[in-house]
Structure formats: C-alpha cells, structure tokens
Image (cartoon, rainbow, N blue to C red; front, side):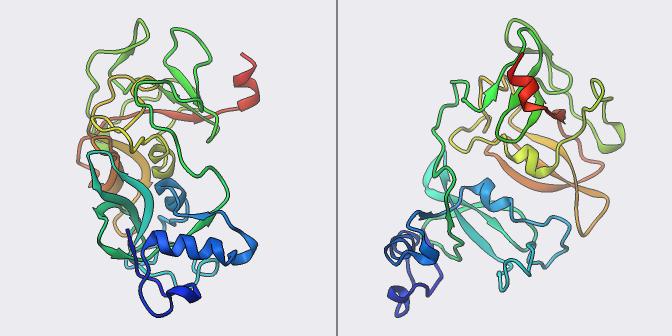
Length: 262
C-alpha cells in the first residue's frame, strides 16, 4: 500500500509506502511507542462521525485536525483479491477496497490487537453462545447481544432455517422482545469478517446470513430519507433510500458479567 505522507524525517525526500512509514515510525519511536501499525478497518471507522455532512471530513476536527476528506488505508486485504486493500473515506464515511498501488493517506495506530485470526468456519473466541437452542449470541468485545438469524429465519438444530425476508424502512418487522433494536452502522460493521466472502461474516456464529444488504439505524447526514446499510457479500457499506428493501438483524446491549455467568 502506498502512503501519501512525508512524515517521519526519513520520508521527507519522497513519498513513503505504508510499510516504510510504519517501519520509520517504530524506529524513531514516535510519541515513545514502537508498536505503530495500520489500523484495522473497524478501528479506523470508529473515528468516523456519521452526523457530519458531506464534504466532511467526517471526524472530530479538534481531536484530529487537518484530516483530509479522502480515503485512508486500513490493514486488511480484500478476501477475494490480495491486490486490493480496505480503507475508509472521510468525506462521508464509506468503506472501499482499492488497488494496493494506489496512493492514499495513512493514520497509524498503536496498541490493541494488531490483527485478527481468520476463521470463517470456526466460532471465534469473542463470540459467546450462552444458551443452547436459542437464537442469541454475545460479542464480548462490544458488549452486544445479537440474534443469530436474520428476520424471517428461525433457529433449529444449530442452524438458521427458512428464508431471510426483505423489508423497507416503513415496513420493518417488530423487534423480538424488550431491548431489541436495529444496530448502528458501527455496531453492524463490527460483525463483518473481511477474511470471508459470501457472506463476509463468521459462518458458524451467524449461519446462512444472506450475502446482501442489512439495515442499520444510522441515517444519512445529508438526507434523512436515506439510511446506511451493510452488505455482507464483501462486508462493505452504502447509503440506501428508505424505500429500498434490506434484511434485518436485531441487537441489544448486554451485561457481559451476567452473560458469561450463565
């Protein structure tokens, strides 16, 4: 990945690649750290302020001054083509995958988990099944409880059976009980597994997920008749008019201590 940056000093006479930028930042121990890296896509998305209208930048400009309203690189390669890599555009908050030879800005991050292990067909360690034969699963990273099946499907024999239905915004199904709601874009995007395609989600935790659009509760900052959706074909997001039809996966906040004690 190419990084359009002239920092640090060793990059001052030329434009660095992302790998060169990371290497130099760690050698110089910028801010006293030597564990700088590219952020994962969802780490980078966590900086997006989806209430900021176009042309942005969609970020807290006091905390991150001079951020460009452009695409910034993330660390994950596209699952179907390693010549492409993901990132986030700070004009609106879209995610994209671009050819790795493309020049783009970089915002490095330090600390945290440097990477996630791929494993579409294995239940990932952060996903916790707390009851048997119940269509619920807890993500201990985000303190969220999810319905494992899409609306229209039912849980049977450790699988989601039936057809996942499509809904417009004015015809959404009723939540399955108290506390259940549509996820925000940041919440739903946290389920995307970019090592997987068709669908780009853990296949064991969320079996038979349609490889298509899912509604979020995040409205467009420029048009209150459009909402963000996540598409689980590749795990990308877009804006969709409220008359569009998309799938629904319910979520609610979870008491992690109570969940892990069950």
